[in-house]
Amino acid sequence: MAQESKIKWKLEIDGVDNASKAFNNVTNAANKSNLSLLNATAIYGAASLAISQLSSVVRDVTGEFLRADAANVRLSNTLKATGQYSKETANGLDEYASKIQRVLGVQDEVVKDTLSFNMALGVTADQAQQMTSAAAALAKVMKTDLTTANQQLAGTLSGNIGRLSKFMPELKNLTSAQAEYGAVINIVNERFNK
Image (cartoon, helix red, strand yellow):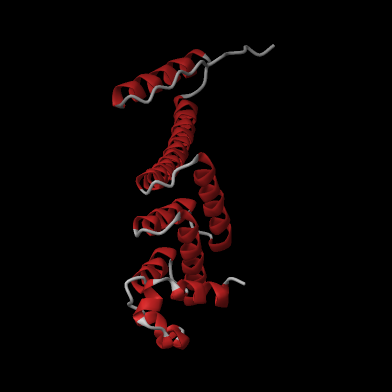
């Protein structure tokens, strides 16, 4: 009957000293169980690679979570600063951001930051959604990102139609006052978000 041996590994990731200790433990266990140093090295290499890969995944997931959480905080703070905060409004904007994420394929934190930016301009949460929807439509049609499209729309609220009139000639007929009151946003939504 073959002798069974058990190798107990305790992995600690606290620097080179601990890695060296772990390697020595593996080597000692390998020697005790008649495994060659080559096998121990291969086992250690495979374990190191697995730990490295796992560490990378954990770091990426943690980073994504932190970015999403920060966007939620910014959105909540904007709602509070503009006097529009309610749990219902915050949840509605969160659902809206998820919807736009599915349509455009952008991260929902980009959508939430866009909503926050729009509300900081002085519009209501509902108007921020309408503006973000118009920006999403423009981004898709103009093959640009949501932030750039939204900035172009935001410029129209100060009467600057600029580049959008080259893309949508009917905007040239608007007065500055009409643009300032959101006519461009309404036209974009009527044209592209039916």
